[in-house]
Amino acid sequence: MGLKVIPAITFGSFEKDLDMYCAGIPKHSTIAISTMGEGRWANYKGLYSIWDKILELLEPDTILLYGKDLSANLAGNIVYKRYVTSKVAL
Image 1 (tube, rainbow, N blue to C red):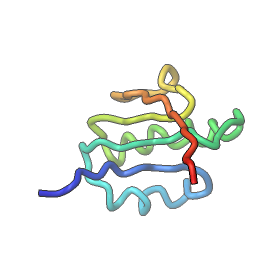
Image 2: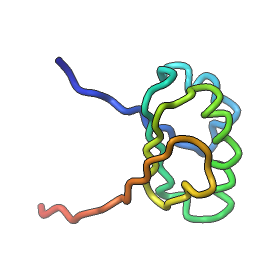
Image 3: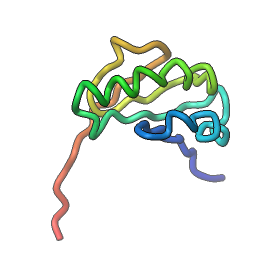
């Protein structure tokens, strides 16, 4: 018995090392990708530039996308999840 872990892929400055970064993620699994913190168009272009390579390397069964919904512009079996924040009382 254990927990199911969904690997989260981020993007930014690692595009050149994407092969190595994805090496530990099983093919045909569920992955998560966040668009949080990528609020400018220039940063979304970074995601668009590596999207096909991620699909090629991992062949994910499902992609959980959270943050801004960009699923209309991306290929793959994408399930969009709205990110909800809440305040924590201290």
